[in-house]
Image 1 (cartoon, helix red, strand yellow):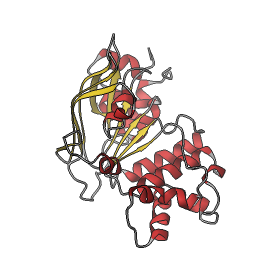
Image 2 (cartoon, rainbow, N blue to C red):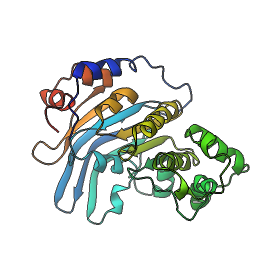
Image 3 (cartoon, rainbow, N blue to C red):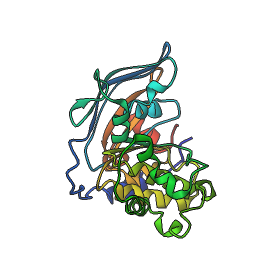
Length: 281
């Protein structure tokens, strides 16, 4: 259920992010979805979604449950195809090249387009330090100074100061918010261009949520971030762009996209306005 919110307060929150300077790093041309459809068996779950995700930005995907947001985000790094009977049509371009093209190495795509899930999933039998570096091991990537990389990733994930004296403890010994930041650090170790986040704060307390949000804003200086969220204030606080999804009938589709400040202050579609003001959802 969407929280009942004051639209003017959301607009003012979003306006505070409107003039944020983009990251200075050379980040590539970003990620583009072109006429993406998705099915589960005969169920047409998502229809004709086209979206651009510019390098160095945060895009929030909002909409009621069941409208295809999580399905869509999973098509962006080919995780959708893990599901039996799943199918898709359309193109997803990373730096202008279709990740679904014949001969593309799926493992390499998932290194470039990382994913953080709704529920923190550190490897329970691994230490904190081993969790951070586990992606390197799984991908058989060589790294000369693993200790430096581990520290750097934990710093970027906003976790270093809390765990630097207990790197040998198991990942499961951390709090929920710390585990989620550990999963972010694990994703960062393989140096992705894009980070997908599927409701990463839904199970966290407000303090942990704010720390994750700070991390997202900092990470967007060096990568493209796409986040599914049901929290309208969160979308207004952290995103540069927002896309509203709705299953108005069936299948799910994107109703409207634009700068976050516009979506929360002057949306073009009445259905978007009704959703962001809590009239339905």
